[in-house]
Image (cartoon, rainbow, N blue to C red):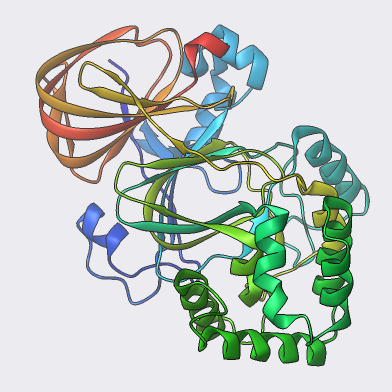
Length: 392
């Protein structure tokens, strides 16, 4: 039997909460924000496993025995675990961001390597050569900005501000997708003084109930509180505001501008850490690179409705690298593994695997491809990350 408990890195980004991840793992409340728990084999922050009484990175174990850990098909196609599994817990908004497609990531990564820009450098855009489609599944009430609004909504939201700056008037005179792209770039390029004037005017409009909707007004004020005079404060005028209830999910493909605003969720993505930022951050922003990435056409953002299969809810997406599901376990369940790696996270209670391997709340474990069949026993809620069998 070769199941492996995972010892996972915690990312202490400034926007994280101080209690959710600590509570889940049975740790004392953290003095610092704990934003993300990474479960996977990303070279920069790999989970660790115990082999021969030594703790080693899962990434290294996979490199040594790719077929045993990944299975022949996945090993030859990806050479590493193709997905990254996370808990994301946000007390305040993340940066506004988008992720590149595969081709752009490969070109950008090679270009920055050729320029000898260290992976840890402030100005580095590309940490790897992979794209980053992702799914977020809410564990608590969860709020996000996601995807451009229809042009008609954007013009309506900016109409109360048309006298503040010339770029708004010019956009409103010809409100189409091409003009919006120009307007967006000019908005991002405004001087500090003009940005501040525009933000101050928007804040004034939030106090007038007939000018902006209540939810837009609320988030403009919240963003200003957390990121004073950052141009991202105006994002609710441009981006859809999405609220997820527990177990609801969103899928984001390449080029979709978004920000997670508040809440905790399970996140799964292609094995990448590539982020191009567009506001609400003190970190590096590369506007030309972001502009090349963005999808400008309005796309309706739909919540992912899971497919129920016995006691499992499966969140299907177009992604080839990952599939997320949740399992409500009561009693016994035989799992058939289709020659691929899997990661499980126990969110509630505990379970036994093959009657000997015990997993408790907050623990996660890796199942190598060589394990073809195993038995779960107990009462527990689990999340499972794997590769969609139909897309391999």
